Image 1 (cartoon, rainbow, N blue to C red):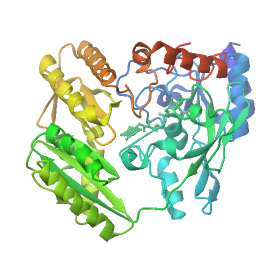
Image 2 (cartoon, rainbow, N blue to C red):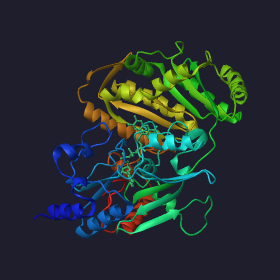
Image 3 (spheres, protein in one colour):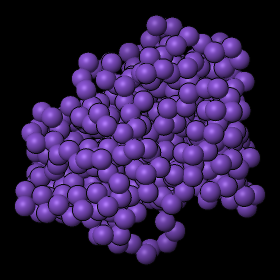
Image 4 (cartoon, protein in one colour):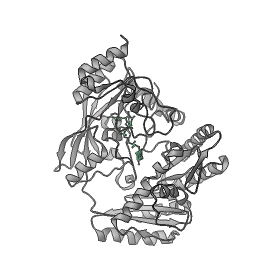
Length: 470
Ligand SMILES: Cc1cc2nc3c(=O)[nH]c(=O)nc-3n(C[C@H](O)[C@H](O)[C@H](O)COP(=O)(O)OP(=O)(O)OC[C@H]3O[C@@H](n4cnc5c(N)ncnc54)[C@H](O)[C@@H]3O)c2cc1C
């Protein structure tokens, strides 16, 4: 009997035979995530689905004892090949751990198991008449995955990323012990901040089984506005002026009209602005209609002075929904031609320069690099395509697109770092960006990351090969 066959037998005795999957058709799904390139796809030897924290801990203990690599998987919506096994180990799916542990409206907290999908979490929080602001684009993501990636989304400018709301975590450590970090309290100066160490650790330091989230009162009213400009540089130059004027939109997205055509074709709906080459899409929220309309008036004066060609307010819910859907379907619309979606984050003041650089690359290599993103937090999404994009239509493959993609990736990351930014603002490093993290991090930072990994996972059992190589 091989080592893995012995592991399967023992894992079945922990979780039941129906929860250890080995057939090709059952485990193929676990060989990839939403990352577009297939180069990182890797079949696991098996997938295991524990039904409790204790079963999860027992599986981790088994892996530690038998030296079997283990990769945690949430919703599999990641964009950096993070939940894909790098070596042919096993995948631990959290999908059976999806319940509410404790809903506490008095403390404004909810504690859930890590395998709860975000769409279910939003529903539970809504029933408490409270608000969990972070909204990474795909609600099929699990809360454990969102914590492990420190996910962001469009609302980060006003409300921050996932880490702002995580106040407690239950984590299975590499030796199978269960650690409870944080709790329902807001403040702690009690020892090292292990809670924050786990957030964004991409399954390499521990398996998150439970999450306690601090919630806010819901905003009450939100309005979506579209503001067209002659070009993207002009659109982006207005953003600091908006923020300086003490208007804090919930979201400020920039989009080039040549890119939005793709989503218009997919959905057969039209973007409200026809003039100009780029738009800002802003979401304003507040306690009531008067407060939000007051913000919109202040905003109108600023964008007009900044060269806006118009300011369009979505009057009703259905128009608002159309605009948001066009924005959120950009990824899907471009997906067929996408090799990789980048999530570079630069200081706000550097966005226009970084986008100018992207346009230079388009000319230099004769390619299309459709770009959009979160203008007020510096997070820029560029699609590296294998083909040209003309008026929203994805063309055939360009000769030599693979080499071109490598070159573009290298150029974009170097530009981001030179501008004081990072190579990933919200999707994580995974396998896809690991070698670039190594090349672009100061030696001291990298040494610290490796030291932490070695201290917490000395046998390199947890998601080996991701983030840093040890
Ligand atoms: C259409 C689309 C839009 C997106 N938009 C955004 C966006 O706006 N903002 C954003 O931040 N992201 C976005 N993403 C990326 C993705 O949705 C997020 O990274 C999400 O948080 C990943 O969650 P998941 O449960 O799918 O994690 P997975 O993909 O399953 O895993 C991600 C990483 O977390 C680890 N992991 C998963 N669960 C656990 C656990 N319980 N314990 C320890 N480690 C674990 C995995 O090993 C892996 O390293 C988007 C993705 C898509 C497809």
